[in-house]
Length: 210
Image (cartoon, rainbow, N blue to C red; front, top):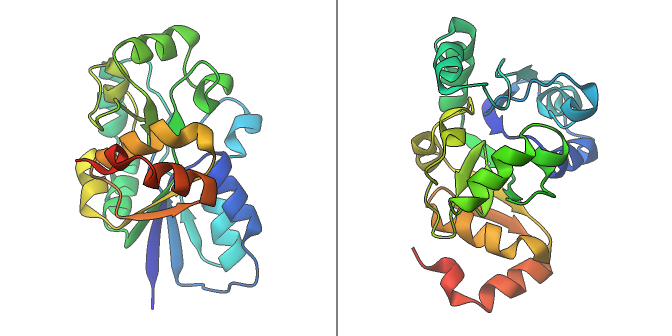
């Protein structure tokens, strides 16, 4: 039957979308869970909604907002726009969320792609951030850090994430600590992970502590 899938964006999901073939599902809908509008097509190639929709013959819906608003006030204006609220309503009604994540560092995808400044990423690391997903920054205990970045990223809420089946895609030993933080956040109930990272997690019971 019909299905609506909410998706994040980034390198991992772009690779997944590019690999989809031989699937015909015209009643599938894919909707962005977060803002991803950028000034550069080079960055926006990691927006995957349209790629997935075209691969399946379904429909795609963007959340028409930047990854990061310039200020908390701008975030509130963006979130109040009718077109944004309509996209968020569709995302909130999705059957499944599929997302990936990153580790917080000056070498992170979001910094290297110019979505956050060096000062912003350094500031959020100083207050304890070790992982980000869906424009949300978490400390190693899986809690949102006290940073205005967590109030400037248009996306579904953490409550929306916890209320949905949420599939997290994870690969690479370098992401072990970041993955553990995301798992502790209580948002993930489905996980696709590579063997090395799975082995590292299983060797550290603390990764699964609430």
